[in-house]
Length: 181
Picture (cartoon, rainbow, N blue to C red):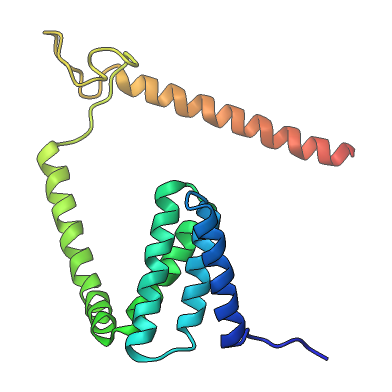
């Protein structure tokens, strides 16, 4: 009643042979190379040991070749990512390295945040200017003194007031429009 859930090894071998023939007929066809790589990767699931690793590496090679021809191949990057994941599952050492990196992530995040905060403190507070796009906005000093809050604060206040008025106006328009509809 239901079709087979997974293709057989014989089916995948035939599909690999067909994709190989298509690729050899037109070596610059990235779709044929990608299809060949995908079939090799699927076939690798039916193998064990070195043969599985070899087929997975061949699949990666075909997918990379397809992406060299067409770097924006729709399924290319996704398929290559799956092949790399499959390769990592084939190597216990890679899996252990991945677990080790996951264990280190919280410490590295804390260290990154501390460095980021230190850099922000070293740069000082951000400077605002009333001259949008002017020399002060670009961090240049034209010889005058930069106001650390003088008239630039009024531009900020005015901007926020304008934003508030527009937001309230839109909200009222929406509410009144709903009441009438």
